[in-house]
Image (cartoon, rainbow, N blue to C red):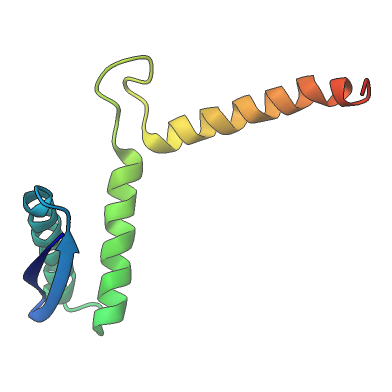
Amino acid sequence: MIQLDVNIMGQAYKLSCKEGEDKALLTAVAYLNDKMSAIRDAGKIKGNDRIAVMAALGVTAELLSTKSPEGPLSGLSIAEVKQKIHNMHEVLDKALTPQENLF
């Protein structure tokens, strides 16, 4: 494990990561810092905890709207894939419930 000293909105943090993962972690820190700083600079939200929550919601929305670039799930967002999996579970539950009575 290696330790990195980073700053997010002027606040210092010491983070740990595996060897070779430092570049990805620094990229994530920079992305989060940019998101949080933009929210702070807009001036509508006060308090670092609220800014952090709003940034987390924004990043989560981005993640859930990310589309798979190739394969059988291409063009589907993560949220759509999760819904398809949920629907499959419902179909399986309905199909397997009568089988439970046999045992």
